[in-house]
Amino acid sequence: MRYTYTAIRGLFWVGLTRLSTRGITFTRLAILARILAPSDFGLYAIAAITLSLTEILTETGINTILIQEKEKIDKYIDTAWMVSIFRGLLIGLVIVASSPLIASFFNQKDAFDLLLLTALVPIVKGFINPAVILFQKNLNFSKDFYLRTVVFAFDSIISVVMTLYLHSPIGIVWGLVAGAIVEVVLSFIFLTIRPKFNVNKNILKVILHNGKWVTLAGIFNYLFHNSDDIVVGKILGSTSLGLYDAAYKISMLPITEIGDVISKAIFPIYVKISSEVKDLKKAFYKTITAVTLLVIPFGIIAFIFAKDFVLLLLGDQWIESIPIFRVLIIFGVLRAILNAFSPLFFAVKKQTYVTTITLVSFVVMIISIIPFINKYGIIGVGYSVIIATLATIPFILYFAKKVFVK
Image (cartoon, rainbow, N blue to C red):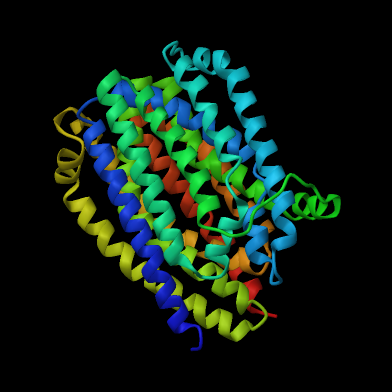
């Protein structure tokens, strides 16, 4: 009970943050969809996939570790910053080096320039002050709201302006670069803690050791949520990839955002009560019930009015994405509900559970996606991710039982 007010306050600010940033994202997508063709979105999706992959492969799990740490994290900041800078430089170099191969893989020469510019994004982001995680750790979500809203707004404005000027998806990447620069600047303005160029070897070992399972979970999660894009882009081409990517974005946002908002707000609270099994179990049941009761009605409405959503947000040229949009709504509902278990597992430092769950989903999807594409086309991709998600339910329930039965 003593955490109820804290949880409600956190939900309010995290919800407001998501509402503002996703509202900006929806507006940006609606504008860009009327400037660019589906094939252009497919080119940008190639750059986005590459950036996400390199980020995940080098994920250190620093944020999760800092939130899990119950003592002050000041001693971690310098080392965390240096790891972040090195990681950003490494990602940028990997993207530059692999750009010709990636463009060739997708048979899209026009993706090369986008990939080169995309390499700047992780390099800049590497310099973000890692102390920003204190907003979440200390449940100070109001400051996180102002930071995220400003960054998203600036990113979106630059993306739209540059895309209008260039009539090319490279304008979207310019927005990402501009947003990254603003985020670095604001991370130092909003916080009094200033990281220094210093590495503590002992702390570095702790970060790398404790973060390995977070890294593996992130890799499998990435593979599950992006392998479908890779397969669509490779087999069906950039136009189909653009249709699928746009349908995925608008189908996921209203549904999974509800689950993500609640999970982000409740995670630090779970950490605080992780040693009190009864309180933890009670808080989790309230959370999963709230997520379920919220996302299912949203999913039903989005499914019924799928055509209206697509035409309103994207325009007539995207009408072919309506069938896959409906299938992905079902996936979005399942994902939102099942993802609510992840903060529970992370709070009790059971990263291995999350890794196992994401591995299962990835394996099932990889086995099913090609046959489903061959039989049903682009809609088959949606069927595949739904089946892969359902396959994780027995594992999720088993791990949840282990957390609560001690």
